[in-house]
Structure formats: C-alpha cells, structure tokens
Image (tube, rainbow, N blue to C red; front, side):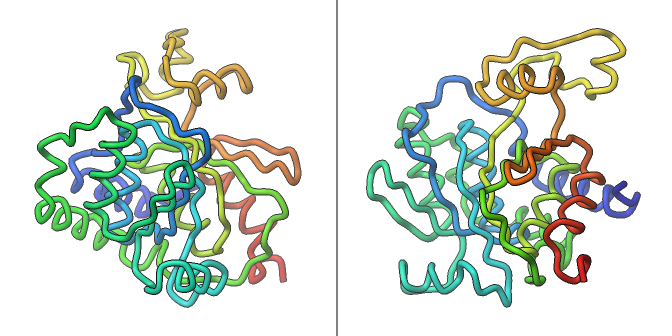
Length: 256
C-alpha cells in the first residue's frame, strides 16, 4: 500500500502541472513501431514529453536512465553524443532528438494532425511548473538501484498524471527496468469516476481508446496502474501490490 505522504506528494505533483497528462485524444495517428524514450521519471523535461504521449494516446518503450545508471545511459551517449534527457527515437521516420519542446512539436506534427496547441507553445511556463512538480517528489525516480533485468519487457498501463501510477514508474526508473508504456488516458465522462465507484454503480464506460478496450477485455475491469509481467504471466492493478512485486522480483537489495 502507498503511504499517505507518498500519495499526497504524488497528487501535489499532478496538481502543480494542472493535471496535464490525464486526457487522451481518440484521433491521433498510431505509429507502426513503438516510439522509444530515454527517460528519467522525475526529470521535469521528461515529464513534459510523457504528458504528450498520454495526450496523443501513444505507446512507447521507456528506457530508464536514472543518475548512476549504467544500462541505457551509455547507449544514449553512443547514440546521441550527450547524456541529456529526454531523448526520443522514432524508428518509423528515422527521427531522433533531445529537447522536450522539440519532442512536443514533433509528436503533434507527426501524430497529432500537425497543430501544436497554444499551451504547448508556452515552453518556459511549461518547464517552470514541471520543475515545481519534480520538487514535490524530491529524489523519487531519480537515482539507480541494483536490479535484475527481466528477460521480456514488462508492460505498464498508465496515464502520466495518475498519482497512483507515478510511484510505480518511479520504481521502474530507479531499478533501470525498461518497459512498454501503454497509454490509458481518459476520453469518456464515466472514466472520471474512481474505479471502485464505477463498479459500485455498475458503470462501464465504452472507451474508444485501444489500450482501455484491451485491458477491459483482458481483466474484465479498468484501473490504473496495471502491470503485466510476461516473464511470470502475472498481471495486477493496485500500485502498492505492484511496487511490492517489483521489489521482491527484481530489486537485488530486496531479494538479497
């Protein structure tokens, strides 16, 4: 279970960003090959890029590069020449780039119909509020911890602003565990109700978003976060349960 303080600061981080990264469009174009993002979870610039992934309902392979990490930082240095984050790789077009606002513009122009919303043109304000959000989480999702690398890549169903998904993403970053981010923002009115309230009221929103549809069909319900580990064929919803599982299964300091 997530502590009250952890949940409070995670909610504060989302609030400081105006809850960007919670809605998803249904009209974005989907790339044939997954995007790749070299990322630090609590980096304010990386957050901006991930928010747009949610907004455009784009999936991506997240390659965590926490401070002190060795798995993907060297790979990025060889690829781009600098250890700067985020770094986007799009094998569909051959495009590779640093700089969060360049990534924002590229994603909207390539997959969002070409028009960059006005709020995303206000780069300095976006970076300022994202920096405040990072301050709320302090060192979470920033520093590497020893872990075992899974053979097959985990899948995390998430949307960027979720206070419950954030601690899971932070731990995955700390452990340098790459994963497939399955974007699951909200697009229907009924999705704004908490999952338990939806179940109590017997409300099942008919989402148009592919990942929400797939998860509903797979598990018979919808909730964020949801982690699937193909290495053990285990799937789970609750963030506290997911965190305990990741520590037990992959964190070397936990496993001994």
